[in-house]
Amino acid sequence: MPSVPENDAESKEADSSDATADYVVQVTATELRRLRGDSQAVQLWCILLMYADWDTGKCHPSRSTLATDMGVSTDTVDRARRRLQNVGLLATEQRKDQNGNHTSNEYTLIRQRVSANLPIGYGQPCGEGMGTDADQTSTKERVPVNKKRAAAKAAAPADLLALIDGWNGLGDSIVKPGNGARRDPPSKELLRGWRKVEKNKELQEAFSNIPKLLAAIRKASYCHAQDWFSLAWLFGNNRTGESTVVKLMRGGYDSNGNSNSKRQPLSSAACKHNPTADPAAGF
Image (cartoon, rainbow, N blue to C red; front, side, top):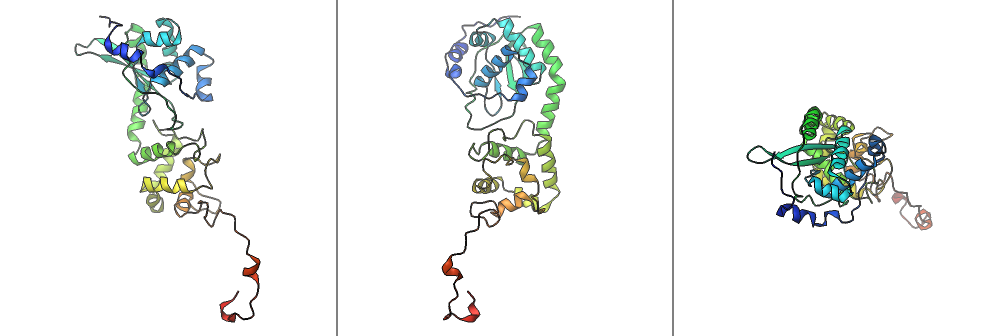
């Protein structure tokens, strides 16, 4: 199998890019538990986060670039990559030239998006990688998992995905960090909620205009940054049995909404009886 020169112009441009600059990355406790203290796998995970495109989670840095970033050998990079694949945090697909030769790997990070304001990376071309027999074997082993995820993603309604994208882009002042919604694929809880919408005309009306719904969420300051304020909450009911999203769309959770704002005490002037007033008019 022909190797790809490391002095390729594209690889040089990528390696000198800002992709290795400081970024804020987030690894959840669940992800750390799945890696079971494998520090090199965690390190590779964070580095791939810096290269990955925000919308797709895809990137393709060369093995030598990753080895340089980590300060380890390419064999160590391969081992850490296989570890991420085995726990379901990373998918790898081979990229081939027109002759069918394996030229590089394309990595896809599988994770929940936390905040659209989090600068994950640029997703620029990052040079070429080198294939190995281990790459081919592990790729075959991952096919069922990838197919399952791809099927779940394809089955997700476009409006639900648009809602998730909008929710994740609201910012920390509205959606408390950690309350972001998983997109690829959506959680079972959100899919169940969306099926509920499809069977209820009132809910259909509330969710029919995603931009309008997001605007209503921005106004619902009573809910902002609350622990319980999640996207799944919109699909439920409050204590009185009223749909939360319907109440939200009516302004019930706005700062000046009648349901949740503190009622202002009646002024003494308003409570005084005026003997000259028309008795029929009341107080």
